[in-house]
Image 1 (cartoon, one colour):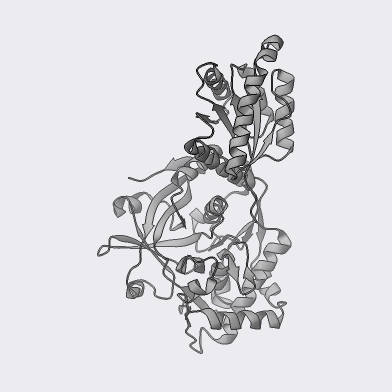
Image 2 (spheres, rainbow, N blue to C red):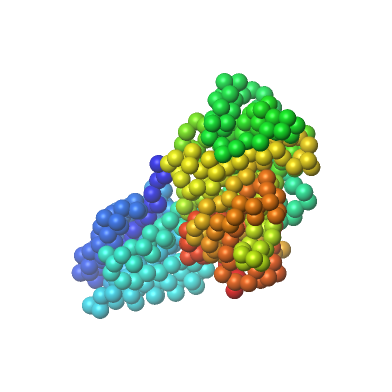
Length: 470
């Protein structure tokens, strides 16, 4: 069970002892109102500071205590005028991101305090968010919930470990990253491992586990097109071993997400890693329900990080797509990638994998992949979705965000590109030439739902520019 976002709440008061004594009940009432509303809503865990802040010492102490308790972010509550330097000290010593909150009460200048504190934080270069209104208003609660969810992503990324299995694939600059930049910008550690570990560990996978997976695939897949050459039962079992080995690598090294090179050492001399790409990203496999682990093929690290952000926002599997073609007849972008995609997207059924898998086909891999194995083919089910991709210009990150709609086309349309590969057909909210002129990678990523505002907020929290095409 995924944990809820955790927000700390600090109430700020006047710095004069006598004035604070007179106003503290008003300050506490607002803190209590925010906490009660969030607890009643149920989406956020709340930790309230032990005491109200009315001095420099208490500002530092309460902020540090909430930080030590593991909050993802902190709400600064203003019910009356509060000395702005208290907020500055709390922000310097506490756990951001910070949400400054005031009610719409004409009797007391809480809003004045919020604006004064916000100005102080901006003077110090501390970005923050603000909200004012009735904390029982569903619209206000939704804004706080979005803030909390985004803060959890930013907080949760810090300290994660990315497994880079293999090096740069196919000469792609946009797929390689600096470990120093990632540690400084996101707090993510990069651990580099050779692909030979997949091959080595694959040999240790128990045969009964392989046979169980093999029977499950043959029972549940819509079709498996064995050809006695590239895709044989034994080669599929090799791919199963590689998948199980990748799972073991993730477990042993405590990786939070991974990228795997594949081409050409694996795809030419052992087998394609397509089965691993599909089921690592899936919320299930032959052993039952599981947590998806982001797997980016071709060791595309910015892809992996984008996918991890999308996964942490939604708890859902994430698509890895190649930008392949524009179909003029249906006015859709065609995304088609050899590296497979989560089979969840074939039917959107998390509770009953068989409903997804009956729409999935395993084809023999293309001749250029001499190692053999399967490609995993399906068409993504229709629905509102959000495409995203972290891109860079001279090392400076920005996130391209595109609201879209996935649509279903006749199955024969997949044969116009590469029928063996998974396909996504997407309606763009702008002319496709804008996408082709400005998008800076051959890979992009997506999840169901409209996450534009959430992604914008995550980017703001991380200091990343947002790029929206029009």
